[in-house]
Figure 1 (cartoon, helix red, strand yellow):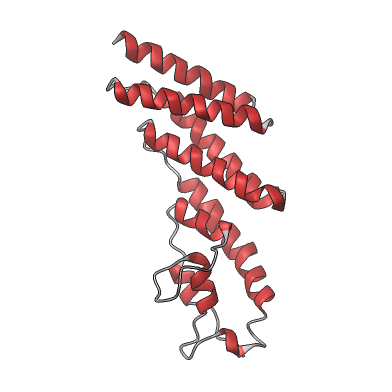
Figure 2 (cartoon, helix red, strand yellow):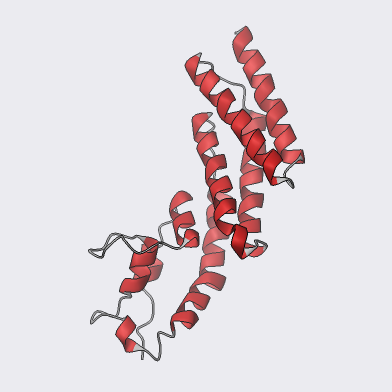
Length: 183
């Protein structure tokens, strides 16, 4: 019981520090490493942590990080920012927090529908170039990008933003299959 209290307090201290120090990326990665060590120790000792504050703070940090990725990210830093977000979600799983990502999923879907998908369609110029569509009106290049279940090669490098949807457990297949036919 003493170990659970000590590890819980340490976890709370680190998550508070992470929340207050989130502008310096080196500090963020250091705090995430500390949380990972805490999660490893807690799992090794079979501790049930008192983690409501940790859960709420981590959910808030994940949502804030996602917003920054979608709306305020430097393109050169996007992949690192996404890795940081994925690490936070992974730590939530390691700490058995049962994270609620519904707000993140809503934000991601809103961005995908209102920003990313229109830009993607426009950038591929689908309405003018019918060679990008197969005979069924689907878009193999997009399926390759998002790694949805198709028979296409997975050697195409997927878009980090589309992979982020998978990380957040957002199923984009319905959006992709309902794209308007070109022409």
